[in-house]
Length: 112
Length: 115
Image 1 (cartoon, each protein chain N blue to C red):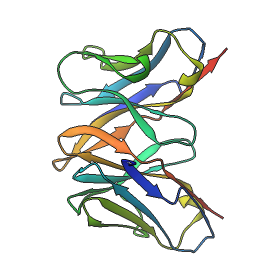
Image 2 (image 1 turned 135 degrees about the vertical axis):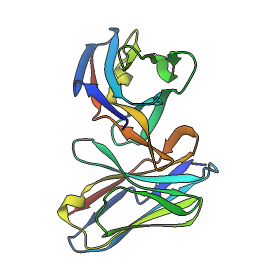
Image 3 (image 1 turned 60 degrees about the vertical axis):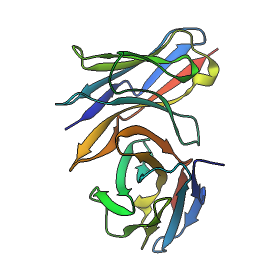
Image 4 (image 1 turned 45 degrees about the vertical axis):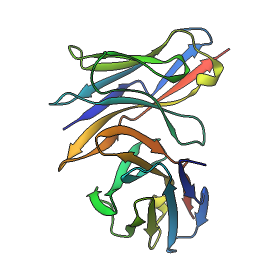
């Protein structure tokens, strides 16, 4: 009964590969987010979806493509992985107008 | 545009001592402010939030924060530190963009607790 679940928790892959991270929330929230946490722990918003529609895209390279098949799911696909993509990626969900975001436990991506 | 600045990337205290983590905000509108905690290798957990109403906000694990408009601050405090409080703490503010809101985080403060 995890509220926001991400898979996988760890992902090690070679440069140039394509990988996906999945996120699901069972809180009935209408908005989902992807955040990137770099090696210095800085958290930066990447994307936001509201009711399956992309509402925020924060100057992320187009190698990153989010997809939201329904309100409860937001996946992140990354093409042609680069060393600089190594980070922890967090999924979160919330409701517009109610600002208590719930975060997943993160996916640690390591590109070698 | 809304933003937050956390003063001090690391704060060290002894067990039982007062914890004070500083956060200042910049906002042209009344801000919605948050503190999150991240334990090692875990996700972020909401400690407390200020939206409207009482300026002293109590959160989980004995933490509280006070919204001070005159000082544009939202510092996090706890009267007595426990070893289990050692973690990374993030102050955050709601940023509104084209009618939609997102959380914008400070750079974080690592709290170290020594016996």
